[in-house]
Picture (tube, rainbow, N blue to C red):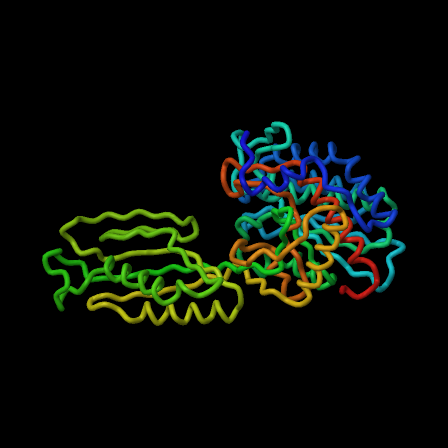
Amino acid sequence: MRIPHPLLLLAVLGAGPVSAQSLSSREQRIRTQVAAGFDDAVALLERAVNTSSGTFNVAGVRAVGQIFRQQFDAMGFATRWVELPAAMKRAGHLVAEWNGPRANPGAKRLLLIGHLDTVFEGEGTRFARRDTVARGAGTADMKGGDVAIVAALKALKQAGVLDEMRIIVVMTGDEESAGRPLSVARTALIEAARKSDVALAFEGGSAASATIARRGASGWVLTVTGRQAHSSGIFRNETGFGAVFEAARILDEFRVQLSKQPYLTFNPGTIVGGTDVVYDSEAVKGSAAGKTNIIAKQVVVQGDLRFLTPGQLDSARAVMREIVAANLPGTTAVISFDDGYPGMPPTDGGRAVLRVFDQVSQDLGYPAIEALPPEQRGAGDISFVAGIVDGLDGLGVAGFGSHAPEEGVYLPSLKMAAERAALLMLRLSTPRPIP
């Protein structure tokens, strides 16, 4: 099994980092406990991956939630399963809370974010290990990150320091396709954020970067209507240009007017057009029929829109509406927008948390940490709480092939992720200002 290029840095590190610096005695104990629990962590990952949990597999997501709930119960966390309305066709979320009996009132309250669902599932995506690489659905995105959370918390408990901390863990069951309405789907996460001071999310990580900003995701549907007539009359005043040419004009104007904005992208993912069009925007699929000698009557295009700030989203939508309204003769068009994941702009608070994480990584002997450019990350659950608490994402395992059948993880990164997360949690929980 070939290790992809993004993992070469970790391959150079091998099974462990170079010599560590500046660790306290209890931080050394934590690191020792992470190493001692590595085999158990890999076994937990295998069990979770082999429990299929595609977003719409309600029973499967709940089963994976139960696997992790047992881990938190064994550590003494107060756990609960948050049900969602049946009409949403989503499994719900796992919430686990810990209020350490020796926690200082000034200690930072930490929110740890994971998710239980996967894009792919089934026999062809089961856990398969070869040496230091394992493949399977969720190995990197993000059952590996969930396992890193558990491994870090176990090490903190076994080292005798978890009692000094206050932690809420939220593992959502529908991150890959959030239920609607979002206000209901993310209530538990938002409520947890309001009780927290710092959010740490465990989407896929790397040896030398973390995320303090990520773009939001919005959807749109464009519906274009033309006059159905014989093709020989196209472009004449009485027939017009037809739905296909109008759709092409609109899409190209989107490209011309908006494609050069930093952090802004938009993608027409599906297009269906002809004289008879049937389209399902929820399933993102449709069918069309027509003839080459008939001017197309209708076109439907569905796409996404990625942005960094609410202002950028509003501005892009305004431009798109203007373009859609300037119709070619004989055509009309309408565009509708669907709110999805909000953006996570960079903040001074997020940069401060990144500095702590950078120091932790270097003290452990791992590479220095830089902020990953926001355009290199998709949308994520942390964005829903970014306006409430400072946050850091990308704390999970290093892998490859996310959202693809060949998804895999470099297993030594599980140890690295757990070590760095445990020490980051410990240092953030110390009742002192973040530098």
